[in-house]
Image (cartoon, rainbow, N blue to C red; front, side, top):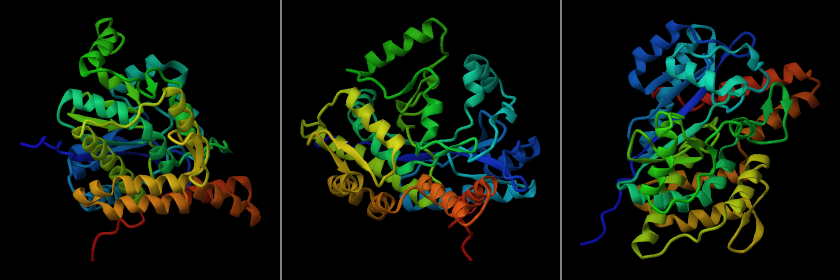
Amino acid sequence: MGIKEPSFTFGIEEEYHLVDLESRGFASAPADLMKACEDALGKQVAPEFFRSQIEIGTSVLKDFQAARKELAGLRRTIAEIAGRYGMAPIAASTHPFADRSTLETTPKARYQSLAKDFGGIGRRLAICGMHVHVGIDGDDLRIDLMNQVRYFLPHLLMLSTSSPFWQGEDTGLKSYRLAVFHELPRTGLPQRFESYAEYQRTVDVLVRNEVIEDSTKIWWDLRPSGKFPTLEMRVTDICTRIDDAVAIAALYTCTLRMLWRLRTSNQKWRSYPAFLIEENRWRAQRYSVRDTLFDFGKGTLVPFATLIEELIDLIADDAKALGCEREVNHALNIATGGTSADRQVECYEKLIADGASTDDALIGVVDMLIAETVAGTSSPA
């Protein structure tokens, strides 16, 4: 009898900023807006830390074409309802220019408690991300795959970057979101664990001492979900384009399946020091997909597009088995064509070159984000 394959079901969570269609700055969602979203989408929509944010989540899925259709429907619905209130969602991890000091924390016990715990850092958390859950049966298997897939987190981050601006400044980083998020405790790359029991003992130190209630307050780049039997990838920015989001979800899921296949043959991905993986994480945060990451097997910097081509080849059997070859191959389009962060900077620089003021150029970037967020979400005729 062969080894039972994990389900490799998946779900995608996305967080959006809400912007005012007149000023293009942050908008504060009234209770009526959230109620209308909840009436339309049920448990697939929820408020976020600030009232200018909204979160959606897909159902548990097995098919990536269905994932694209569902994400399109969720984005379309949020946009239609927000439009009634003179607002629009943008799928970008930071707002290009809005002042975070105007934000209000969502009046919900969890968020009020977090705001108190975070102090001044919490007032900086005007950031949005994308999380991908993948169903992995077995606690120890989840930990083993978590240890191995850490290597690929910088690759996924680099494909997703959408936060080059912060309060009107081009930061020079493609994912400024991570710089903000990393100020919180219990973030960053997870350490290696020998077993699920070791992971549980580690978390329980904080739980027993009432530092945290449970593992949902661990915000690593990758974690065993505290709610579901999944391995939750959290390192990525939110993708402005739907096709990019689905491609990253497919790449992550197929990479986990590839590592599982190695495990069934008593093999595993070579372990590298967290110090080196963190260096790639920084390069992904700082630079564009048109730059380089380390290939630690070779010990050299390699063009990112070359690394993605190699990864696509490595997971070809898995993409075929999961029916997502087209979605996985789209990652190469991102690697060569650029991410949302690249397009935002290019849009800004073009508008400035054409004579726009700084303020008008930043508004132009927001307009681009509004349009791209809902591109391809129209209902079938």
